[in-house]
Image (tube, rainbow, N blue to C red; front, top):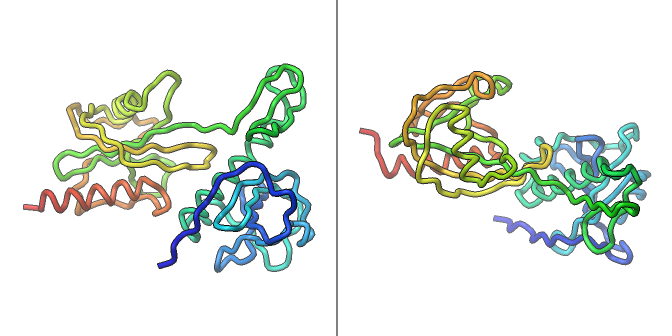
Length: 280
């Protein structure tokens, strides 16, 4: 089994890029790959080697011993022969977790800089800071950092049953755990209680942390928990949630793709409950 390379985040680029670097180059929301079959990202000293002049770029750090860069390419620029533009979600299913996370980081940085060209307070053109990854206004000193929007996900259990819900915009038959964004002033525990109450009408207890996943659509950090059912009548809100139901751990519906933490959460908990509470 291949061991993923270690990623070291950095923001100050090397004095000279004299060895092939890994490029996470985007046209709008699509990432450029040299091969669709292998999802091979460009590896070169500079994108100009392939006739591409980036609109903007960011140094990301080291993946193993290779320098990494994020870049935005004009959407009208023709792709080099043999290259393709691949949706970021599609790339996630073709590369290891480290490269997937790094591609998400790259996309968020490009989006942030594109959206922060001018100061939101006084309208002056922003400038990059040299001592940290930030953009600052030379007039009013307002500083902008890459945004992160925290969200929670909670998988509620009742015996050997899991509470799963679906949104109307999802593919037919797909269900997942309850999720929602953290509001200003909330603790993560508050968000879990509010979201479950608002979306499906139930109360929870015994909240436990499961894991987290950065999710660059557009710039979320999903924090996943498990919880136990503590009361209330199951009642989908009809707006955010179209359907919700209890599913036995051995009769689960269609789940989200494997790239999402939601699927890992559901499968991990379902397997544990099936072992702890065998079907009678």
